[in-house]
Length: 415
Ligand code: EPZ
Image (cartoon, rainbow, N blue to C red; front, side, top):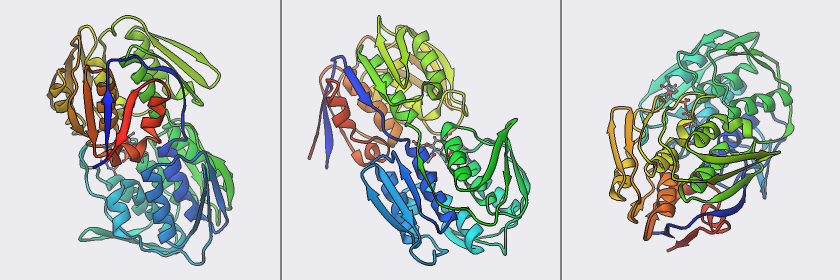
């Protein structure tokens, strides 16, 4: 099985260019279902999850052409109303096709995404929103069927600012009759990037006072759109600089998207310099401990929780991290403990007592962000580590080994 071989305990030094955001590219590809015109998306990262969504879109009848970082999605005749099980099982984000399909065709049949290692990952808020827009929802076994002669605008209040539910409802509401208000909507940069794309397609969406206001249109048209940089990739490599005592610059980023991470890292004693589109992090002395919680944007992003906990494992003192988004997002800490970390988890709270050194281990990447955390720990640890199940890393990090080698990381992909 392919795996990384990482020889740790050496500082990372140099500059990394950040790729386009996975979690902006995925909904952007889905939005192409809302029109028969061609939609061209630039800055699309080469990731397994992107490949999965493009395969889903083409299985629904779209013509998908990929040329480097550019993806063009055009009409290939009638789009189908049924999504194949395999794609949704592989990746939850494929479930986002449900709303656009029922908005365009009046019917959609999509498998329900399963839970995953980090939580139940329910879709009740997606279905709540689509029902409010007038869709009749029937669940049978592991699939959900939606039928609606046409969607009509509604006032929908989300009990939790779900990223996926906000995206699903916003895309569908663009083709509903009348106005939709999504209260307590998510406004992560990736959600706002999708809103920008939908408006470029002729949608009329405005984010104001915590709600998304969508004025339905009869049709949307094609456009060309470049997705925002991946703040999770950028944050991961900044933490890699900190955990190895390095000096790394990430370029092609939007510092505003990383505001809270940057303030936490400077509170830990890292030196951070921002220039236009780039952030440089050098770590002085051993990091100081901190306490934080994960929260919807602009709170600390749950996707950077595992890399941060890896860093806190080497801080000089006791830290705590509360995971308020997903119910099981600390399972990877067992591997960090194998490496010498002192972490206790009770419920959604981890307490991390920093140690002087971590030692190498053999590990498997459990999911995208936990996999990244284990790579970072291995880069800091004494000795030679191996990490397999790289398909999880490949889902969310473009050419990770190559990028890390370019800044002095001793990492090889073998097997
Ligand atoms: C998106 O997932 C991201 N994925 C996740 O990134 C990210 O962790 C998450 O948002 C939170 O920021 C993509 O954008 C493709 P949610 P999503 O709906 O949309 C519960 C990564 O590594 N919930 O905001 O699934 C849910 O169970 C991935 O790139 C419901 O209960 O996140 C979870 O506990 C991991 N019912 C919480 O809300 C629903 O209908 C957050 O979910 C929907 C969600």
